Image (cartoon, rainbow, N blue to C red; front, side, top):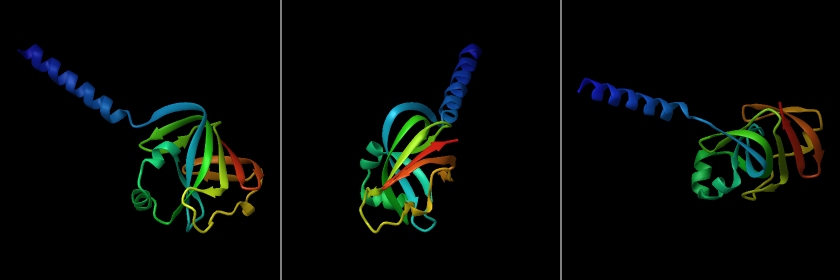
Length: 143
């Protein structure tokens, strides 16, 4: 009887440990469509989400989660972590932001005029360097 109780306790602890320690999934992609979430007040890129996950939500849900934000299409290639729905690109990943293509078209708030190749910015919590800037397109490489 003691062995059974001990086995149940050990199994339960192991399962709970696995549930709480598996916070992020690391993935790698040749190319994934993403949405870059830009804070309209600070004009910073606060988050990224996978496009297909983002599209499954209603506009009300999105605006509740990201008030004062605008949403731009982009592409991600390389490794990244997925924490809940938020993408955290890992070192060496490349992100392309289409600064002239909004998900919900409203007044444009993100201007790429203040950015040029070589500038460093943050994609959420991840530091990135601008590799190139073309009309309506910024290409970042995470560091």
